[in-house]
Length: 133
Length: 133
DNA sequence: GAATTTCTTCTACCACTGTAGGACTACAGC
DNA sequence: GCTGTAGTCCTACAGTGGTAGAAGAAATTC
View (cartoon, rainbow over the protein chains, first blue to last red):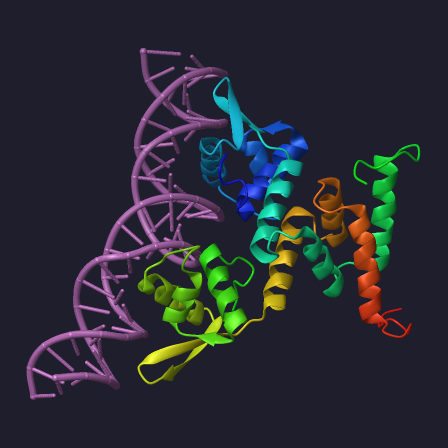
């Protein structure tokens, strides 16, 4: 599971299906992806197999077919990929990424306010203390 | 310049040098990178040539050697790559990325506050209006 | 002008993603 | 038991990044 930080489009698309469905066969993944991407079954199978070799998905046999399941969670992938991006583009400074988002007009300052509020509510359900300071 | 959104490590490292120095020869890039990455000159040259083919850098001849210059700015690359990540991992919702950063403990809520302040200062130097709404 | 130095370009190789056709295999039905 | 059928695996190819040796070209130096 070494290269979690640079997953391709198809790999992510497949993982998204597995996250959504819990587990799925290659054919089910193919069906779920159909529309956006009409891919041959062998394309999906090949990628699932490769993801398995990389430890990113696992599978169990059910009769003749394999049922796949993601071994990594969506949060984990997000965390890993975001951290990679931050280290590559913002010298590891996550706040610089947020700053960029605001300056680039991707988020509004007011949204920061909302988020701060929302997080505080989660962290301190009854007006308690923070873990630092 | 179609594939700005997925630049490799070396490509970014080279661009960083060009951004810092304005322009540079392959040997200068190599020298600047030495320490972190000790690469053959031909490695740098090859990548600079490829970046040129992709329209990401340009060069002019100065006597026998080429002097390279980035054709894309750091902000542009950041914007493109961040947008790509957001679309791949957060369904295009940049605020969700910020939310993720806070929940993952990568930025503190207090930092959001600072950023909001900082941005307000930049946008409205003397308490003026915003450009939207 | 020949030799040396200094660049660039060519060629090559490995790894990985995306993609898929075809081979192989095993179960299901007749 | 044979034959479809449904599923996996093998093989392959193009594209791209990372890496670099070797070849080719041009300027500098004797």
